[in-house]
Length: 441
Ligand code: N7H
Image (cartoon, rainbow, N blue to C red):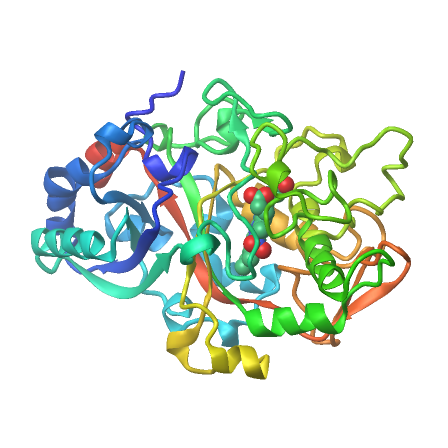
């Protein structure tokens, strides 16, 4: 079995708190930082074992990860064997389809050495732990940038800013978690470096670490809502509101409740959505159904089908990630809702603080974004990009096929992108023993 006391908690099961702070830092004094990391910070790092039992969870959960720049600052010269990590995310921006003028300057700069992830039920708890860490570190690191993530309020808890329930589908790790019906099962080495299934040569200390792909993904919610209204579908037995919801559900592959359109194509089913035995138990095949041509249940371009094509590509493949993101930013204001336009006030920016773990970034997050979501010919010629996370090319607006169940040959043109990358960074989340023996030594 896996050494769960050695693996940082966020990787396999997610910290899953209502508040999470991403504190991006630069290392100012490597020598002091190293001794503080081993002596004072390491005891605060939450392992998978601690996270698994509510009774052993501290008030504030803490994880830490380092960029290549951070490794270099600490004098760690071993090659981790992941070229995208080594080069940093800014060098990957054009492959990902990003417009770097949209990047926040701190991600486009070169001073981020690492990130602290602090998660808790309250922002007060997080701030107390952060003050404690900062007084311990006594100036050996400095803040470059931070993002305060928070679950949405009330009934929207667990839903991202477009309104869809998130966090339903992640792969199960072979030998660690019992798969729910329909859940993909992957070898541990797809997520954890150095474990069975990781085909790359790594320094021995890197075992049980994982690469963390962080992305600040802005969501233009009023514009998304307006687009759904303007392009509402025309299923005969549905109301205009239901046809509006249907378009969003087909773009996502799930209803806002989380119910998969593959199982309930024309009406939402909140009971199905809430049932973990059923809400992920589909693979786009149906009896007497042509998997290669039939989009009546789920469009080929739907976000969840693009990013996890299940039986479309044979059901067993290694391009999987574990997602552990959280929304950031406030709710849509009345003024934004009335104008159908996102405010330019930076304090009103909202989106997803996206976190993906994998043992190989080029086979994980970057693969899903570049070769599946952004690729108009995946998994079938000319289906168009992922309508949620695809990116318009300079040639103009993009169109997406298969969204209209009454006419699957019809393309719907997206007048703009509703998710805008504000950049990010690639990090390595080391095991607790590596923090002790390699990062602190
Ligand atoms: Fe996506 N969303 O809320 O709209 N995502 N995602 N994602 N996503 C998923 O099944 C969303 C993004 C994946 O196993 C759901 O748990 C938003 C990126 C994968 O069937 C919802 C953004 C990448 C899955 C969203 C965003 C992915 C998935 C359904 C950006 C990778 C699992 C809930 C702002 C490159 C698919 C669920 C499966 C599911 C949303 C980004 C990947 C609702 C808003 C960048 C692999």
